[in-house]
Length: 264
Image 1 (tube, one colour):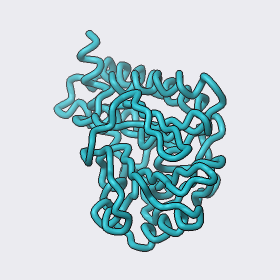
Image 2 (cartoon, one colour):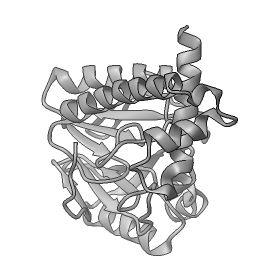
Image 3 (tube, helix red, strand yellow):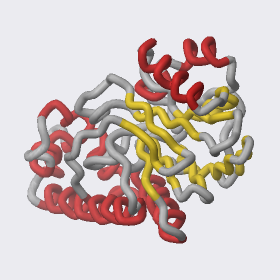
């Protein structure tokens, strides 16, 4: 799955709009997508992942909400990572809106339905990238917000030790089931949107199977006896990946090694 077209944010149907934060990088791709959720005609909106502490970005999110004739009534967090939550204290100052998720406010419950105005949001617990990762499904809009569990370009990291591969694989299965029931568009936290969320998630599932096979092969080739097994596997399996992302690759490899050990 590749999509190298420039991404600058924008609408995804009538109920979701991505405001792109100015924090591009190897791990954040084009930057963090802050999602504004709003049903036409409503005077309330939901914001997902305010992102980094950048005043210009936060004001851009506020302007987007203002242009919809709405106010921020709720902020949701997909997971606790810094590039999604750093702005929270300032964002709460600006909006006075309650926050849920990422260790803030009332815990988000799997299969919970959040109804705000005409918005209908279904919470899907999707641990794996981190233990607290959640996704948000807007069934009526056909939109699936996946945080860092599924990205818009490339693949994500299973952030060991907080993240783990077994729950991550189960999360991909759950997301694929939701995205396959009816046509569903992908709204990731990083990278561009996709019209066929099920296809992107299917690619992720296949990629993880292939990586596991590569790790098994690396162990059989002698990496199992290396002083630092995870590093040896990274150098063999992720040789084509830029070295600046090797630390993240090592976290994913360690998660794969743990998974294989538990599967014996």
